[in-house]
Amino acid sequence: CSCRPAAMLLLELGLFPSAPVHPTLAVDLDLLDFTSTLFRVEQPNIHGWTSALQIFL
Image (cartoon, rainbow, N blue to C red):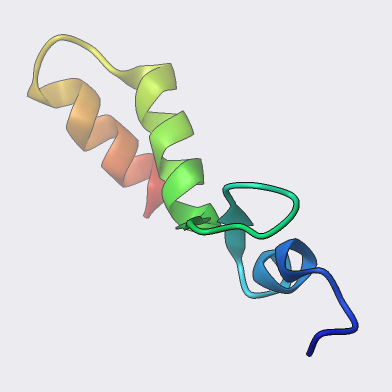
């Protein structure tokens, strides 16, 4: 639909647009949430990764 901005439509679909006008890339909001969790609990070993995965799932 051309009556609404593309960025708003992407957000409604669970995607984060790369730009507010004419986005050419979008990232899944769940992936952004997982990345945020990973950076909060990340450690320099496999335990940080598995902890983030357990929290996310």
